[in-house]
Length: 209
Image (cartoon, rainbow, N blue to C red; front, top):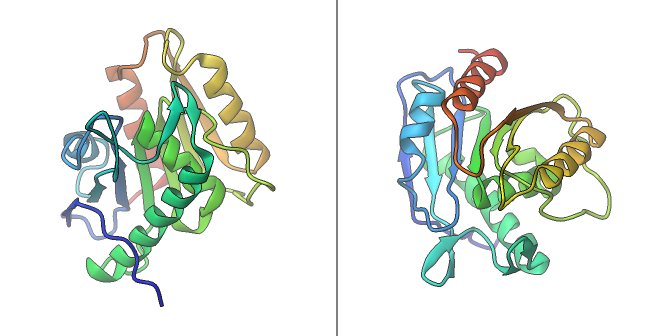
C-alpha cells in the first residue's frame, strides 16, 4: 500500500467533538497558519486541519501548478487533488477524527482545490465553503453530490476571478446535485465581513453540534 503524502500542517483538536472538522486551504502565498483564525471564527469549537500547499510559484506556496493566471496545469491538479484527499483520509486515523464530517474552507487557490476535491474525490468532504473559486477542471463525468451543502462566495468586482467564472462553477456544482448557496459581495478578491458572517450562519445551520 502506498504511503499517503504528508503535508506540513497544523491540527487543532477543538473543544466541540460534535462539530465538523474544518479543512482549511489557503490562497497563493499562504501557509498552514493563514486561515486558523478564520476557521475558529466560522465554527467555534471545531477541529481545524490546515495543510500547506506543496507547490511553489516564485517561492509562494500553492496547492497545484498553473500555467498562467487562471490557466491551470490539469495533470498536476488531478495529482495534487488525489494527494490532498489521501492526506485527509490518513489524518482521520492520525488525529483520531473517527467519522466526523470534514468540511473544506478554501480561499482562492485553496477554494479551487477544494472544488476539485468535490469533483474528483467527493467522498472526502461532507461540505465546503468556497471563497473566490472558479471551475478548476471539467471531469469526464460529474460526480454525485446530491445533498452535499456548498457555500460559494464571489466578488462582483473581483479582477482575479471574474463573477462569470464563479457562476460557471455554481452551475457545475448544481448540475452535480450539490445543495448550493451562491453568495455575492460587491467587493473584489478580498473577503468582506458580511460574507464571513453569512458563511458562519450557513455552517451553524448545516453542521450543528
